[in-house]
Image (cartoon, rainbow, N blue to C red; front, side, top):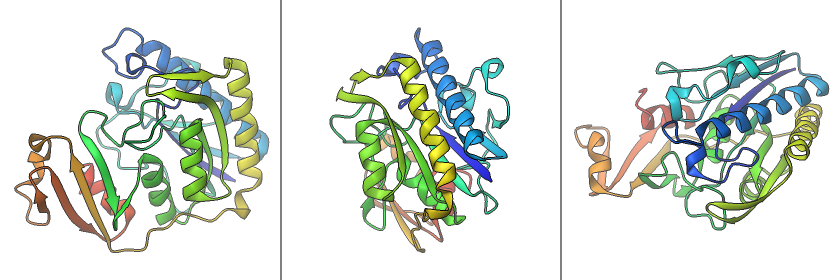
Length: 267
């Protein structure tokens, strides 16, 4: 049983402040530790459920994709760290049986939701696939679905878990905090949160054969709306991109993987 684990930071246990998610901020080390301990719990649960290969991707944008505290990571998994050079959903392919989304957050505009955003909290209003607004959870699930891999576990706040169930159906969720606002939440105690994640990871592996991948049939028309016009500047010279207005771009991709690699500048 092979598990691919995508990670972020805003949905980690106890994290409610941007000060904990940006590398230049004083409380970033708290966010790193929270994420690392959540990942460790998911690795332990996956192994208890029967996983014999686990690939964990550090997907948070801070610190050049090196947010885990390496020396504190759980044994029994392989960790994809750093960048540039990694593509979207690095480590996932058709050999994976089930994917996890650990420490994820709700899509931009969700309220109440802890640190809601899509890709960039400073630049993106929303990203659509064939007219449907998708957050980072949806895009990760779609890229995994491109390989035929279902998402079996999502961890984060209550808004993220609700988004996961609405989009993915019978996915296992681990609700480690309940949002009060964008920067406030009722948080489970650390040991309780990690125990919940561990149980969820074990269940997700055990139920992997029952799960269906989330697939967006191609071609996919992707529309990205930015907050300000200058944030769309990199697209203006591309002949394969249509400028819908001063801050909205649209392009077509064959599938979800190609779509996100175009968005991220890897294609």
